[in-house]
Amino acid sequence: MACTHRVYTEQVLSDILVLYGESKVLQVKIIKTQTFFIKNFTYLVFDDQTQHALLVDPAWDMQAYDSALTENNLMLAGILITHHHMDHTDLAGKLAKKYNCPAYMSQSEAQYYNFSCYNLELIPDNVESLSIAGIKVGVFLTPGHTYGGACYLIGNYLFTGDTLFMEGCGMCNIPGGDARRMFHSLQKLKKHISDDVIIYPGHQYQRKIGKTFADVKASNVYLNFKTEEELVKFRMRKGQKGLLDFT
Ligand SMILES: [Fe+2]
Image (tube, rainbow, N blue to C red; front, side, top):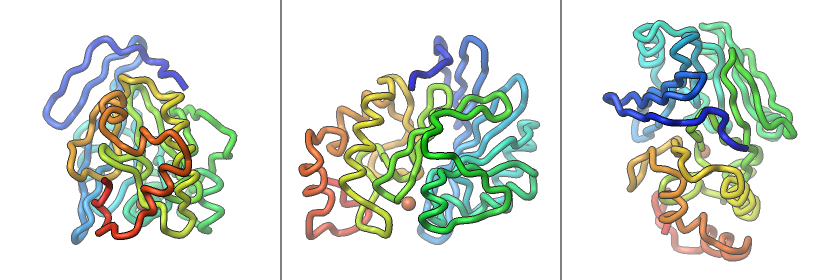
């Protein structure tokens, strides 16, 4: 799915990346949250003209989201959930209630895990885009880490949750996970995502988030396996020490 906002100027202001498109001014504020040892990268995307905002995978720190919305004088129009894991959904329902907005998740993810939260809105598996308060969101169903995980393309940014990290992909040996489906999900991203799209995952490990897809493709082994079998063999290999053992 091609990005509809042609990019011609990009500028980094503190932790706010400003993207100027032809018809929209979309901003992404990176909000890093943490509980105990779990660190998450969550994202506030907003249209500078309408002041409408979307939150991707909010967790752990209500104050951080309240402050970001207030400081930028924003109205929260929706919450996008990449998958059901607690570190991506912890505050989805609470924020949906507080700001009276929908929380979106793929239908297959919600149904498989029996996930529910306040104002949950299911995205049918054949739906490829949403328009939320005038913000166009491309939806890519990318199972593999979980049964019905999704990535969201907004402007020139792809929010990948735990499907794709800078240097790896999400674990596939957990309930609903499937390394074979992960292979096809990554192939789908390779087919549809432009080289200049910025990748924003749910976690940062060895490499800094926010690289272009071209950069990630060049350095991430999981985007370079030619067959399903190759990825499955490598991702499911024995002796992996833990979460960070991508390669
Ligand atoms: Fe996860």
